[in-house]
Image 1 (cartoon, rainbow, N blue to C red):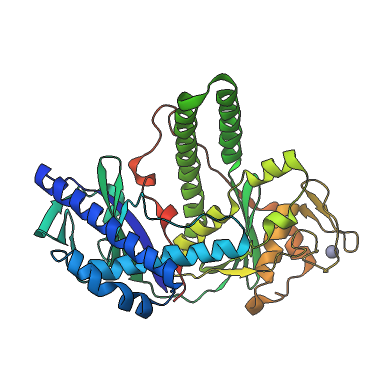
Image 2: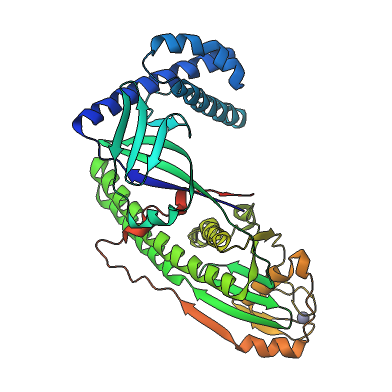
Length: 412
Ligand SMILES: [Zn+2]
């Protein structure tokens, strides 16, 4: 299995290096602009075609720049152009793409940069330039990763290096499955192994509490302020909310992943595609339900499980909170309670959902469990409550700043 994650480093260029970077960004934006214009003109989506159309001219116009910048400029222009074509197929009036405010320079992984911990060496029009940066605590975990690709990003006066790291993780054999039901208040887990079922509830109601509080805060900002002040305050609070929620989600998903590793189980989660269409209970309730970032939680759990050697699977959630895990009858849950009209099972609906998800994994289709034994196990629910212990003013242990929110989980 491959783990891929992107990490951000703030560069600390000298005055001289800063000038080189500024020139590089300007020249690069020019290259992308020209590639993009040509792509639009020729309606070109193939690298070969675009390359033939622009390479010679760009080479002549930017003779001092390493030629690989032209290659990556073509890559970037094609990506912009293709996404524009996709968008305009779905919607009318999509404005023509431009590279006007381009603040990114795409580097390839072999010719344009050499990564060292604490210093990046760049190939530029002024020769090789070694720019230092600080290595933050969170990044240390990537020490045994491979450096895959990278990009330079400019934000205001600051320059960043975004590095994509990759590592191969050996997959471990699972002894059972772990059904994971993410709901508005908790992440409910059903550990299903031959011979037993055990439940764990990770209480994440704090997320909802934070979201509600910031929702009210934003509303009052919208009422009381306007213009730039409003935009500034909204941005500040959104960022703070995001970090807070993120820190909690990381903590919760780490607990889940540690259970995965300890119990040696394969995580089974619901396939969320289409959840927005399925959940439609009117505006107010919709906001409430969507206030739980289901996908992000799943993503973190998946990532951390893969780190520990267990690849998650996704199953169709249809009826997962309605079917009885003992007899298969379909019942409607009443609030948080679940009662089966056919066999009499009484349980918590989220635990039922977690159990159903677990047993939907094809390998464990139906584990033979006598109803008596399962009833007994309902009583043993381990509870873990995730509380926000972060102080009001300056949250952010620096560790959550560069967390894998920007990363991808790649299938092998
Ligand atoms: Zn039943």
